[in-house]
Image (cartoon, rainbow, N blue to C red):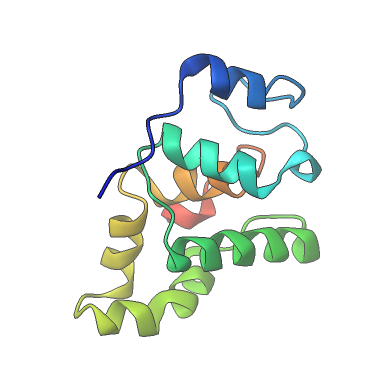
Length: 123
């Protein structure tokens, strides 16, 4: 079984060439987001996106479009509770398994959100 080669820095730079981002890589305009950007952000974060990741990404995007802010942790935990139970761990711990370097930071970045002033997903 072969895996895809890692995305080169030049390929990543090319994909993001026309997308405004801040110094930490968050999109400045969430409407610029697409699935390719999500894949590249995930690759930069060393995350292989699973169906659960995608469910959370789309949930975060929908929540933001509806409420103009990212969801609080309790909302996200409700979404992943069944999946976490399937793995025999708490949903909060499973959220950190999915996004090990800060669930709010990584999830928001992959979902194409601007960097929230207060990362509600990490509360």
